[in-house]
Structures are given as structure tokens and as C-alpha cells.
Length: 242
Image 1 (cartoon, rainbow, N blue to C red):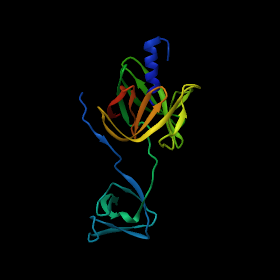
Image 2: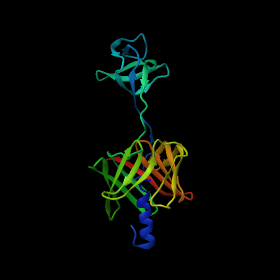
Image 3: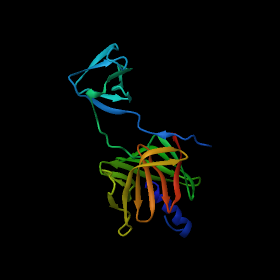
Image 4: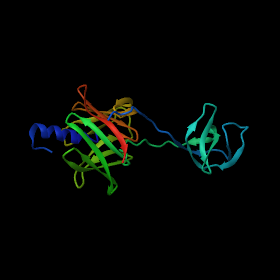
């Protein structure tokens, strides 16, 4: 829904004139997780085996970043800036709420029914909101995005904002959209796989509006596709570092 208001404005402008390189397919997925040591003393090994050289000991409550897990029950971590292993069963993994906020280190390129456009981070803040540019070949507008424990939002400086996703996300969750009488949006899936020219995005949230628009959001990426009546209205075609 991050781009839905821009899409609707473009359509409205077209109708009424008065209203506001090939890409390699990539799969996006989280690569690390966080955990704390859940035993009095946890041995750190050079390799994923109890016979490997011991490199140190982690005390209970120590936080670690896990880069991968083996089928034999070991977790790869970094110990003194070097790769090491600890027993997975002595780790308590921290459940972190997934973020669907657009990545302010990236430039997004979308292709829509009205042409191509980009979302470009400004690197600036408006209170707690991130300021972005919505840019076409002929125009550039500022907008803001934010996220907290209650939801994901898109808005305009010193103006209104819209709920893109209401949190905590669960299938069936509904909320009002736009002005009174515009209808509702609802979460219809948390596990959609969406393919676009920019890549394959797994475990996407699917949001359907009464208007017929369907929006797809990927973790740590944001909105990747919009569909209406089976037709792609907008999709992400490129995601590059700023």
C-alpha cells in the first residue's frame, strides 16, 4: 500500500486532470537470527563437533548472532571476530517482529500501468518518519514512511497518513482505509510467494481492499506488487544500493 496512493493519484490525473537492463532473479530471505545463551557455561568450538578445539566459553545470558545452523545441532556464530560454533540446544532464540518497512539503504524501481518510477531515500527524518522521494522522469515528490508495533504507515509531511498494514499481522485482521466510507482492508495471507523482475519474495503479506486492489509486502523490503482484477498494476523491477 506504500505506493497505492501514488498509483491512484496518477490514474486520477489521467482521467480527470485535476486530482492529486535485464535483471537477474534473486530470492530474498533473512540470513541471521539472534539468541541468548541458556545454560551456565556454553563451550565455543572451532568446528561443529564436541571433539573440536575449544575456543572459549560463553556465560548464561550472553547474546549471540547466529549465521547458520547445521543438521547435527550446531549454530555458527562469531567469537572474537572469527567463525565458531556452539550447541544449538543451549540457545534461546529471540523472536523479533518482522519489519515490512522499505529499506532506506536502497533505491526502488517500479513499473506500473502509468510507466516507471522510483522510490529514493533522502536520508532525512521527519520526527520518527523516514523521508523519501517518489520520482518519475518529470517530477519528484516527498513522502514519509513509518512503522511501529501497531502498524506500517505511509504519509505526507504536515498532512494525513495511511495504514498500509495493521499489526500484529494475522489473517483476517481488518482496518478502515482512507476517508469515511472508502471501505476496509484486510490481511488474507502471511505466506504468499510473489515473483517480480526484481526477484522472488517469500512469506509475503497479502492485503486486499474492498476496492479490489491486492497488495503484497515482503519482509525487510516493503511493497513488491499490486494487482487488481488479475492485472498487475505495479511491481518491483529493481532494488539497488543507494
